[in-house]
Length: 232
Image (cartoon, rainbow, N blue to C red; front, side):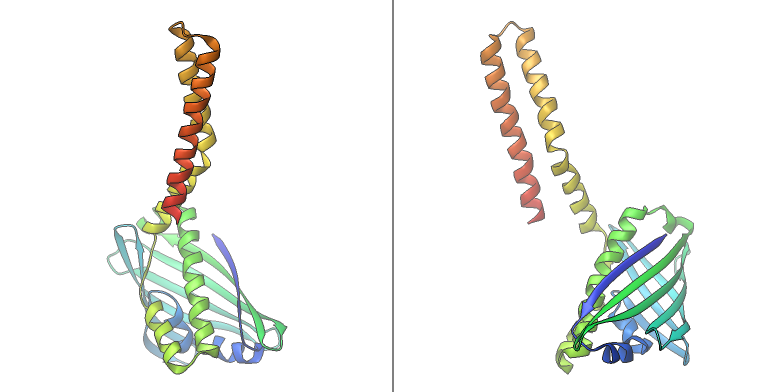
């Protein structure tokens, strides 16, 4: 699967490029990642932790810098990771490219080609993309602090990034969105059930209609309010 993400940093393209090609500084900014060994100038080893609900996954990853294009400000990393408890693996090619937006504003475009194998492949594309999106958000925040923050802010950002991303909250939000999105469906079903039921027992048509509409409206706003409370 291919996952594309973009974010902006408040720094010049040259400054951002100097950081982007410094892999030992970049890896700790990726949530749940820890650099464990520098093999040489283009190869590293890392450990990556991810939580998908109650399941904690830990990967040992070999990271290689396979392409550096200074003219286009593009760098390509390849990663071959295996889950430490034998639950599968992941292979990824990560291409990052910089685009100058102004004297002190740069966009970072990241395209990841990801392949999962073994039991970890059972987690659907949706949750993988959600987790990846959350990871990129925290990654961007950490890079921003590395580029323009104080030494204390940069260190604090790395410490926050060291905590693994959890897919549990994302799953809950997705469920809430599904419930809220189906509010109209549930309202229609409830209205028809109540109205037809009232008519079946011989209730007055107009009174049944008014009562059914009022009850269905109450159900609709209840579902909407619950969805809003959950996502707040």
